[in-house]
Amino acid sequence: MPLKEKVRKLAMKYEYPLEAFGPGQWKSTGRGSLLQIFVRKDIIDAVGYACFAYGKIDHDRSSIRKALECIPPKHGQCRLSANPKVFMDPELAKVFHFSSDKKRHNGRMEFQNELRSIFKDYYENNQEKKLKAIRQFLNPLPSTLMYK
Image (cartoon, rainbow, N blue to C red; front, side, top):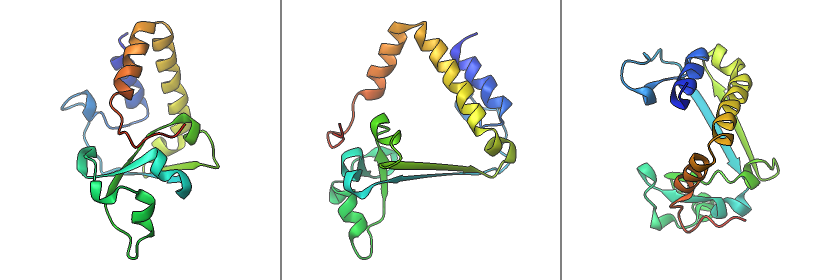
């Protein structure tokens, strides 16, 4: 079974939105989710950058830390690099996810484990596709993201 179909079936199992798979795949029931990401202030500028909608860099807020320390704080969006060295260290970053849908919320860990397994199986057997995905994901990154 193709990777896209495996992911679609898993999303259906846990009632996740399917808009990415094309129109008519899923009808919204008004269920919401909240994702909170907290990153330590001393590293925020190394893993994130201030931006406008769709990730266009906001040069007026070159430092997220300084923008947050202003009184009143400056408002806007930011993007974070999902650097595993940061997100796997609970001293550097914390991520919280909540869903108003009970099935989705209670099944999130199981869903994530199944999704990891799907991708692991797919990419372990397709090294060329794995390298292509890594290159596409990592290129280009804003030059401000330098956390090692």
